[in-house]
Length: 290
Length: 289
Image (cartoon, rainbow over all chains, first blue to last red; front, side, top):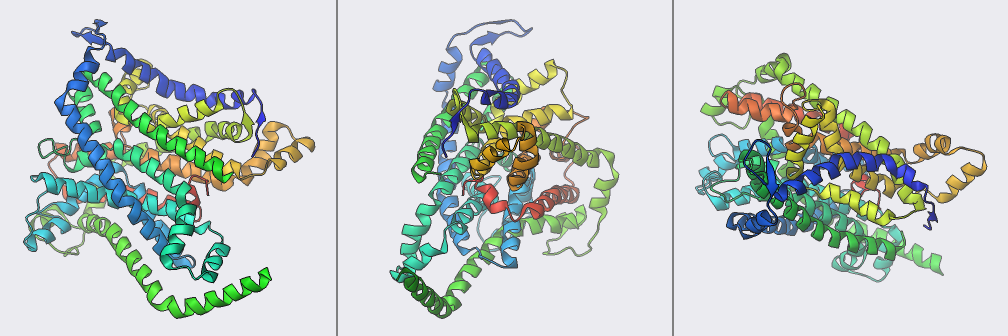
């Protein structure tokens, strides 16, 4: 759509600007402020330069947390995106079952994040949980509170349980918007099921899938509550992701300087990767002429 | 010619589906059923626990409660320190939803209709706030709201959640508004409508589903968030999610009550989904389908 140039449109954006400036810019400036200062208490601060940034970048612990975070995001994207597409393809297209499936699928998305952690805690515990108990009965040595690998698997399954529906719903929205003429043309050409998927459905879902990947990447990269409730970052530091580590430093130990420097680096990493996604998405929008 | 092809194609489609319908429908139904069972099993387990008392949970292991009891729910619904958690959560979630949608509407209109200085940068900058990890903001928020005397109030949590809900609402509404032809605006102006009157009387009904979806998302992300709402409250505005974590650590683990509280947090979400179910798919695509 062509848009008219109108500088007065700024007035329409003003309320959002004021609100977001209050709730984002001021706090962010506080963070920047702390990241360059040191204190010995009593609200006396002095300039520390880039000391904290150097400390954070050199910190083994934070590097490990970043490594775990990237591994985690990569794994859940690799599972949730194909699985979400598969589920979307299997969704019924009409009738009462559409509503039923939609509502049931959306259910995990509306559960408070700490309750998600609690659900999986009581589900996976070896003494009272259905999953943990069943696995032990089957003779599999499973205990997510003691074994790092078990903890990882549990957290990944939990995230798949929690968020695959988001990908599936997005993919489904893309699928139902494909006009039936496309399928008919494919029928005339005697296209196989795979070819229909590869050359019709997948390209048509591209836009929504990018949104799905962007949202899933952002949210998995800042995951905090669910693993915190489930494992508390343990056993040891095995499931301490970036946000858990950050909250430990900032609120647990009250190390404002390092925490602030850490925050800024963390934010910048997310920003950089999201910017790439966003640019690709906008270009795609333009190409399709939406 | 073209029509004949379409008719032939439809004939072929019919023949093909009637032949292939049997096995194919079954596979997809099986996958779908398996997925739904996977989704519902942990929730069922929580529900199962919520109907048992603590000694039954710890002493025996059964797929359904042997002596079903509603005591856990009674504990929560009669104890003010429990049920006020739900009231507090609802208050700030509703406040946040109203604020987010109200400020996002005009902004989304501006982004979808006009080009102005810095619009693209502004739009991306708004989105960056959706990308900001709440953990980064927890401490500065605590200091900011303490400094202005809003600590432990509902409005503080509502404003804090605007950080990620306003950008999302703008994004969703902009997607829906793009789908409304611009000629409608122009016709209305020619007919002598002023901007506010046009916006409220004509434009808003046209994107009603978009507003519903934006409100749904604001509700959803405010309802599920814990880190910020826990950091910004202590007593008077404590959300249910925080009540759950604290009570658990204070009084030993009463799994039954914990499970019942969990089930009760799922109910509002389920109700809201039911109302917007027809727009869910489009809404999750943020109006961009």
